[in-house]
Structures are given as structure tokens and as C-alpha cells.
Length: 81
Image (cartoon, rainbow, N blue to C red; front, side, top):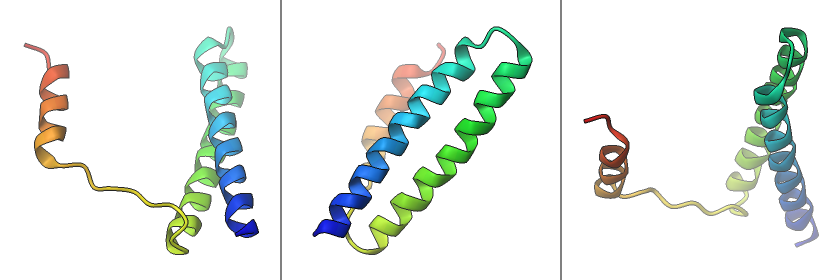
């Protein structure tokens, strides 16, 4: 159980970093700073994905497949008319 909690903490912290780097990328005032944040975001997204895959493989992260009807409804609500 300790390993699961450690991995969940890593996943949550990594998601938080992704959020910070995304906002840094969006709010950057110069191209150089934006690129630096974007590179950090891309690396952190990969780490998040790796952690998620390891947790899912151990059965520590459960996810549900969204129903196609619900996905279609959301897609339609955002489509341009």
C-alpha cells in the first residue's frame, strides 16, 4: 500500500507541475521563455504518462471508458454551427 500511495503522490505532484508549466507557456512574454516552459511541459507530460501507465499496470489507477453517446453529446455541444 505504501508503494501505491507514493506513486499516487508522484502522479498528483507531476500533474501539478504540468499545470504550472502550461500556464508559464501561455503567459510567457518572450519566445525564449515560452520555449523553455514548453520543453519542461513536454518532459513533465511524458513523466506523468509513464507514472500513469505503471500505476494502471499494477491495478492502482482505475479508469472507465466513456460512453460513445456521451462523447458525441459533448462534441456536438462544442461544434461550430
